[in-house]
Structure formats: structure tokens, C-alpha cells
Length: 269
Figure: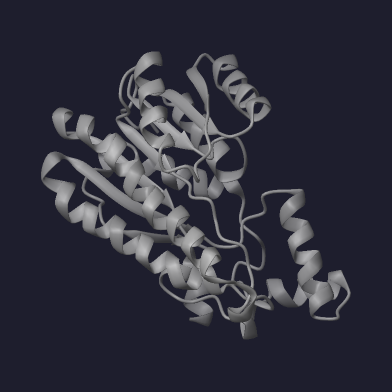
């Protein structure tokens, strides 16, 4: 499918692993000029090499997404390499898991800053050029916690910070969609469910099994039965959805919260 974005500049934060990596490569495959943003230079170099090896154009920008001053720098680097972004993918730094008693005020402040304030600064940096061009696509990689709090009684782990700040991030996204629609800019949030992103993901569930005092295999069998698809998702299944929302034919899809979770939220919330 031709998304009609050849030559557009696509900024992808968190673009060196998991779903962000898939999005960066898919947009590169569609002819977009990709600006990949992450902290580590080796991952940036590897992702850029993967895109250019297939004939695409890409550059890597090393930046700390928890630094609110970094977003103007990122867009300036994109403009140096290509031009200001037409497409902007925001992958926030997710808060850690834990219950109510596990965090102090500083942790709540950091979670709010990384999810909400960082997205505000991201939008402040990318929106002006989109308004001038009267075209733009903004997509946030969000969380199911934005609409339905992750419950320890169901998931075997606490997620109090995400449950608290993710709804605010979604509210900002939808508010921006309302304000920016007349400029031809769409703003959407994609909420992945349980997506197998590699070794770290497996380690997380191994810890969940230990916390539940269960062996890993029976724990996972029981856990997967809670997902109607009876499996974890693949990064490609989320990345392809995000890439579609960046295309020409997705311009009438805006202000949406789209869940890709194998039916989990429908079944349990």
C-alpha cells in the first residue's frame, strides 16, 4: 500500500527498538526521509543503516527525551538534514511500575513531565511548520492505562504512575486534534497492548511470575488466556498501524485513541 508520503520528513522518537524501530523502517520504506531519535548512538546508527540499506534516507539524532529543552534541538537537527518534520511520532519515556506507596512526589512529577509536558514541548517544536504547510501527522505511542487503569488484581503488577498521568497525555492529544484539524494536521494516539519487544519484556514477566509465586510456564499460560488472541502482539502489528495513520488517506482520522491489544481491553474492562 502506497501511503503517499514519499519525500515527507518523518521524525520518530524512540525509533531504535521495538515498535518505534518498526515505524521508522516502515516510513522509510514508504519513501519518507526519516529522522530517528534516541539516546544511544549505536542503536541510531544501526537503525539508520537498516533504512538506507533499502534505499531510504535517514539520519540519527541523539537526544534525551526527558529533557524538555531537547525538542527544539531535535527539530533543528531535522531541518539541517532535510527540513522541518511533516510527520512526528512521539514515544514517551514510560513510568516504572509500582503501587501507591512506592513513589514520592518527585516520581509523580517526573512521570507527568515525561508523558504530558514532554508531549507539549514536542508539539510546540513540530506544529509551526505543519501549520505553514497546512498538512501534518502527529501520532503518540500511548497506553491502555489512558482509558482503563491497569489493575493489579488482573495484571499481577501495579501501575499507579501510568494510571495517573496517561489520561492527561491523552487529553492533551485530543485537545490538540481539535485545535489543529483546520490546518490539515491529524493527531492520534495508538495504545499497544502486550507487545513482545524482546528480552526485557520476557524478563518483566519472569518477575511477575515470581511475584505471583508461580513457575513461569503456567503463569504465562494463565496470563495469555486473558487475551482473546491468546498471544502477545508483534511490534510490526503496531508499527504498521502507526505508519498508516501517517499516510495521505488517513487525514480524516484524528483525535482518536486506537487500541491494538488482541481484544484484551474489550474482554476485561
